[in-house]
Image 1: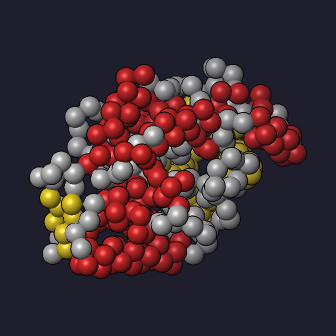
Image 2 (image 1 turned 180 degrees about the vertical axis):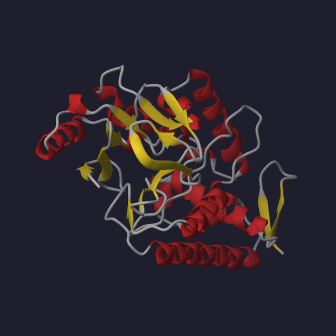
Length: 315
């Protein structure tokens, strides 16, 4: 199977991102890197080393909307097909109504989570990440079980959690999956907080989605899982078990904190990430609220909102 990994630099703490060129009936790029000139130059050089040019690429499939996976779309011709989950489109097109909804969601959520006012400026940081993204639209939306035009044998698997629009591509005959950021070799993927798709909708519990997506990996016969960052994975089930255990261990740590005293989301975040939260508030809050969502799902905690913000109590 002709799958070529292309490694591109990013300005983010996660480091390089992997995108993949598949030689099917159509030359297909899976994910598109971050929008920087450095990434674009690296992309062109590696495409040429494989034996192609950018103009040879016939379509692009997106595993999810995060900037390090979509940004370089802006460097491609406007008529190239762009394929992804339907929830991806509002992000990559920077739909103005959705961006307003996004900002309003976090402006309401952060105070409920008990975040000090001096940190509310982190909202601007969330928006500033979009400069590394793109302004494009999907030309074709896919869902669970769909095939990709020009990629015979591949099927779409919906794997929400790290992003709510996350998909993976699976080839059952070859026992190969291109998994985006679903499962990474060295680090756990962060289940990132996102607003619901519609105004007034219920908040999606990203970590619960993510755990379910990890559990689903056991259903597939996978020899090689190509990842969005780092090396390929050959021991998928073993690593899934390790990641789920790590999550349960962290939840147990949070529960111990709550047994010592009831706390807000932000208080727990500060204890879990005493230094990192100052620089990566959105990611650390996503992780913290995810653990509290998990504890609530297993009936280990209760939450009180009577004072206008969430206070969690161990049962």
